[in-house]
Image (cartoon, rainbow, N blue to C red):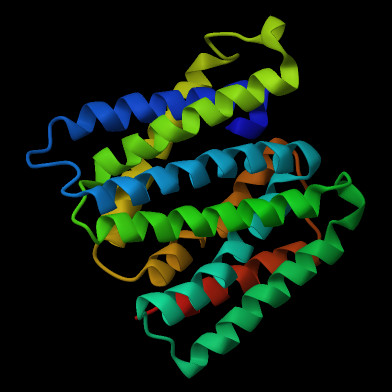
Length: 259
């Protein structure tokens, strides 16, 4: 949906605003204390900083490269980053077969990089990889906040409240005050994207509260397979290496997250 808009900076800020209002409103209907202690709040704020960085990197990546390539690199690299931290510092299990799955993810990313080299602008790979770092960061911060018993919807609304000013400042810095608009272009599309974002993250955070960060993050990032299919609707055409690369990332992710 973001890729279909001309001004992705404005559209991504609109998605943040919709998600903030939707998640914040829904969290008011959930009984109990939203943030039980300061640890839940601090990790939620850290997740928001990573979310802001993620959307900034997402926009830059989508501006420079096709959706299928950039999204697979972002998500695939985040899988590789989350696992060592989760295993070494958070006590998550790591089976010998997991190493083969990590290799499959890396091989898939390599195939994608080779296949799409002629269709991306300079700096696309750097932005995609930095975005993967932010994805890994917010996944780990969400998990640490949930460990304190935070309410998932309140956690997500806090994260959006932190990320929205970051998005807005970046938007103004890139385009200037003269181009600032309250409503983005194609508001219906932005509204739909924001609601889907809220629903997707609500399901993700509930799952994350039940098991390890690496497993949930990995299974969630099989979304690269759907993205390759959705990108066809944008007119993108993929080579065999790209399909094989996305398949390896997806299969590696499924193998890592399987229990």
